Image 1 (cartoon, rainbow, N blue to C red):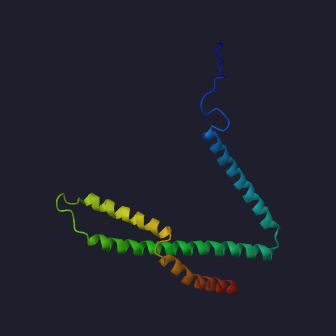
Image 2: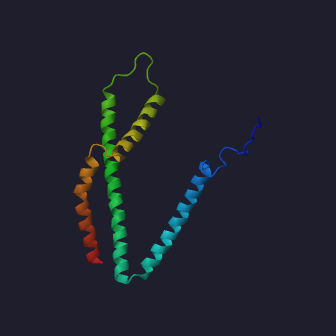
Image 3: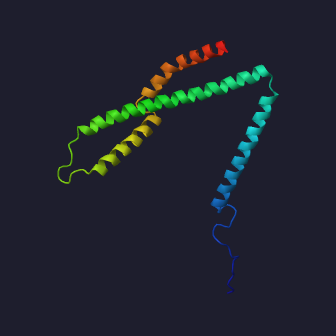
Length: 150
């Protein structure tokens, strides 16, 4: 009975098994595609007549203001939730057996801040959405008034 020896292969050198190479190639391709897309968009904007270019710039500015408004509303909700959470934590009695160090209190405050930021960014309790819906028409009307003045 003859023993057969297969080809020597190192793990990860096969085409589908080399995930770091594939992910690096995909990232490079993504960056390359993004640059090409930006270049094409720039050429398309230059090809527009001045009126269309101004409308496009205005749409981009409006989108930016919309994102800033959303972020501000989420920030407000995070602050509100953080204040509420601190008040709730104040009702819990301290650990009298071992006590609580100053460092532990600082850590809890920092953890609570980040926790409430994540809660607000994830939808929170709906305050940010309500504020956004209420403030968006005001921001749009202010922008329209500024465009009329220009």
